[in-house]
Each structure stands twice: as structure tokens, then as C-alpha cells.
Image (cartoon, rainbow, N blue to C red; front, side):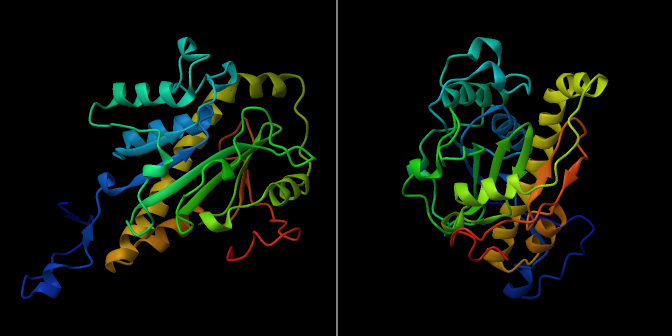
Length: 275
């Protein structure tokens, strides 16, 4: 895969192989592979944004139907309601870029030994009895995923979105940890009057704005892996700037209304290796 220098970098003289393979070379977005598990409207919008950033290796999985609540971000259309989410999204991605050949086969996703791989899981807030909300698919429904894959984990609840810190797939959060973290957050003011109307009107715009931010975070996680694989050493700083090492809570209608909740990992061992 051809590479180009980082912007503003100085080319080193080609005096030897160790200099020709310098740390100033830049990976390309075509080297990134993303597996998206759970394709609600936000996750589908994230897939579209990644495609527009040049990511062609998209593996999308969710056999559930498109619902009216999935509309609004532009990834799905009204005619898609009732269709399989993964089939509708694959068609949409192919229409946007004929170079993209998305699949719905998590078992074919490359292992973590291939740099630039990222898993994104989007799910609803688990109920008090531990069961997921209707339409949500538990992570265990996708067996065989390499436990070393970096995971971007998204959890929806009561109109807010909890973005869990990036962890290996093996250390993905359990429903107890997610529920405890969401329940322990500071209660926000319930919108009423014009504020409630604005929140309803702006819901699609808020989801699109969050999808843009998440696309940058996913790209930063992939870059971290690509740079670590060949010693370029640029990715960790990029991922730190996105806040991907910390939990984030996105609250509509304002895209910049982001808080950083404390994780509650006291109920089980899934929080290991999350520092």
C-alpha cells in the first residue's frame, strides 16, 4: 500500500533502508477495517461518515429491522423501514461509493494481528433485570471475535449516549457496569417548554454531529494500531486527544454538551485493563 509523508514533515535523505522506511510515512484510510455490531440510526450514520473519510473495509452486522426511530440521520430512508438493517445499510454504502463492498459477516473480520482493525458495538441501556431493550443485540451474540480487537462501545439510554472507554473486546463492559455508570450520573434538568421542542427538532442534527465525532475517534483508534505496528509512534497521541481513554456522555440537543462520568466497575471483573 503506497504511503505519503505526514503534513509538514521533512523527508529524510535516502541513505539506507532504515531511513527509506522512516517514521514519517502515513497510513491510508484504505488500511482501516471496521466491524460495526448493532446498526441503529447513529451507528449507521457512523458507517457513512467513515466511508466518506475513505474507509472501505466495512463489515456491518444487525439482522434486526429498520424502525422509524432509526430515521433522521440520513443513513436509512423511509422506504427502508421493515427491511434488515444490515441489508439496507450495505445498499446505502454501495450507492455512496461503488468502491465499497460492505459485508455482513463478523466471522470473516480479520484478526487483531492485522493493524487498523476496530470493532464498534452499539446497544441500548440494559433493563434492571439485565435484559437488553427490544432491538438491541448482546455482544455475546457475535462469537469468535478476536479478544484483542480495540472496541468502541456505545450505549443508549433515556435520550443520552454513553461512549465507553476504548478497551479490548475481551474487556467489553457488562450490562451491570453500563447500568451502574448510567444510573450514577448527575441528574440533568428535564427539558420542558421550548427546550423540549428544540430537543425534539434537533435530534437528527445531534445524532449526525455525534456520528462525526465518533468517526474521528474510530479513525484515531485505528491509527494508533497502524502506527504501533510499524513503529511510527503517532497514534497514541491522536487517540488521547479524542478522549477515547475516558467515558463520555453525550446529551442533546447541543453537540458540545459532553460530560465525563466516572465508571462504576465494582460489580464484576469486566473492568480489568481499562486504566
